[in-house]
Image (cartoon, rainbow, N blue to C red; front, side, top):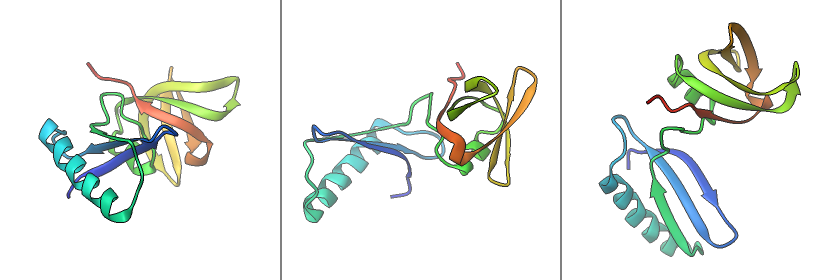
Length: 128
């Protein structure tokens, strides 16, 4: 349908959350179109769920792939590491680029290079 799948969450209660994006942002009509499409696909495929929510990723969009970090180079992000490094488990700073499977983040004047495999989760810091 021309949308980027940003994230997908499911819960034991049968809730399915789908986060989509496209250049220029997502509208309510985009969410409705994807919701109607997925409802039909789930029915045909026999996928059991109780409730479906489709929305934009929001201002604090999750960063899940190297391509996400490259796309948002120059923006601020919060990165939570799987294991502490130099006494820190949370890094908040400017995305300085991606190179060789590493994400580079400028935090308080220091450049950190972090492998994607070492990142537990990451999100953009809302730029308001």
